Image (tube, rainbow, N blue to C red; front, side, top):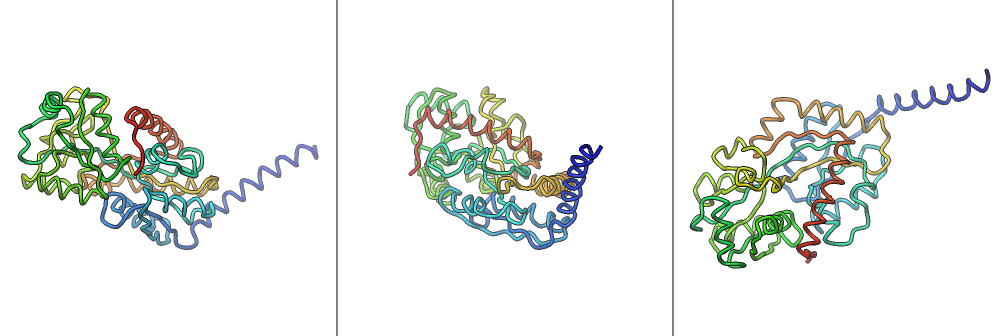
Length: 321
């Protein structure tokens, strides 16, 4: 009988300890590291979740912008932090699943993190300069086939999602276009508006005002359904490219081995926030969607995205600057 009591007592102690950890967390402010400068979609996603998460948890969630080095500065800071739930990372998908395939990093994107939840997903929009004589993705592809490498496209840098996504389009459509890398989406958009760049693929927020003003033409949304902010723009699926479904996603990660009670509290609280109409409406205004993934789903999706983009990167021979 005494032998039976020992494992039962150990189990009870673990359960009580886990309960105490969850009930006490958080008892101070939480740092939410962001691998981008203020104003971009990653920063917007972080601030969208930080405020309601802080209110729900009863402690402030402080956004700290740590841009640079394709997300490596922010990621390294997270991985050097204790796994106690007080330092979190709101990660941009390109940095999590593309950067490790285009340059050397000191971590495994799947196994060296604790996935918490996906908080926002944004399909990409393919836009062309206003005077390019095409009005659909099919017409753009036909033009590219007629004159290989004559069309140029902008990205925010070698290995950026815009770069890799357009290379996937090239591979799927059997076309060749010329890549022009920039140091950020802002400069790339400036040259696209000036007419020295033919097209780009990026998230809706920086494009919507220019599309509405007629300064850019939206040809396709890389999604399986049209988005509310661009209801008249067809999808890549409608254009005959069902494999060209591309989203930027913005997910929360913690250091490896985050205690399960803290993980559950964070993830379930985020789920409740994302199910609110207020959060859904804020996402829609950004041309994005409130797509929640729990820790297990996010880990599996991260692994799938790493594999998917590695194939495109290896085929295209993409390397970092």
